[in-house]
Image (tube, rainbow, N blue to C red; front, side, top):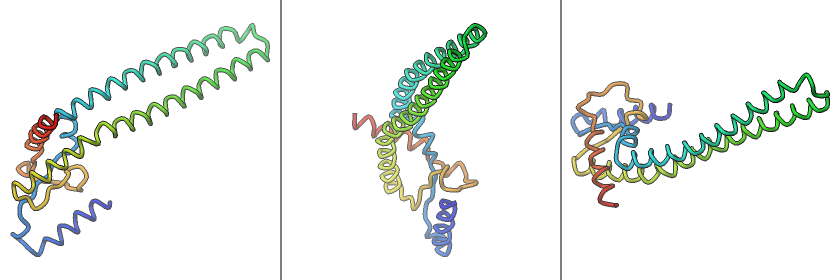
Length: 172
C-alpha cells in the first residue's frame, strides 16, 4: 500500500511538469537476480546447501516413520506404561523434527539474504550508473512499484542483466 501511495505521490509531483518528467523505465529486479551470472551462482550455492539440509530432514523423517510403525506394531503387546513411554518419545521426536525444520528454514532465509545482498548492492550501483548515463529521470522496480501496466519499451531488464554481468566480471 505504501508503494502505491509513493508511486502516486511521485506521479502527481511530476504531473504538472509535462514533458519535463523525462525518461522513465522499469526493471524486473527479481528476474535480474535470478538470471544474471552472480544471481545464478548464488542460486546454485543456495540449492546445494538446501539439498544437504533436505537430505538430513529426509533421514529424520524416515526415522520418525520407523518409530511410528514400531509403536503401532508393538501397541498390542506392550504394557500401558511402555506404550505411553514410546508415545512420549515419539511426540518428543516429532517436536524436535519440527524445531529442526524451522531452524533450517530460518537458516536458509538468512543464507539467501547473505548471498543476495552483494548482488543487490551491485544491481543498484548498476541501475544508478545506467540511469545517469542514459538520462533517465526515474527507474521503477516492476514488482514493487505498483505499476499495473507499462509498455515493454520501458522495460530495461535485459540491458541491466548485461550490465550486471559486466560489472560482476570486472569485480571478479
